[in-house]
Image: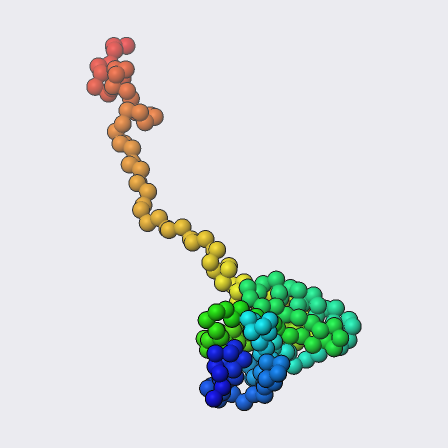
Length: 208
């Protein structure tokens, strides 16, 4: 019976209880397997490090940036993608062109919990699925690193625009008051005699 109080044994127990096929190295405290996401199949590597205090997860992309010119562009893409990440980071191995997403978690005194592993792994998978298409657009679609990352983050950009868009002002439904028609008998109108001047039609005419 393994001692599940140890972080590595707890990690192994997590994958066994979820029926996942994996390989492990007890000496190096590593668990590794492949997982199919929404965009690609990734090589996953879980490690217990720093005297059992840290869980580290690495998800490797299924492509290599081997050509020097492409590798320079991938470096820019990685930098642009990392800028928008709240957790984790992308790395580029300059020796072979491997792009990997890395995320870590401090285990703490309570030990490694199933929910910790599940939450961290879900975050990692969602992140690589979002940015893997950007890598494909850059390497095979002719996109610039800036455009490739922007398209992968388009949903987030759209949400910001929706949140900051000012609401339209309410339409006024009240009508303006209509002007009253002037009294046709008013003495102020031109062409009508002013009674005060004594020029009415009832005045007797002078004898000629």
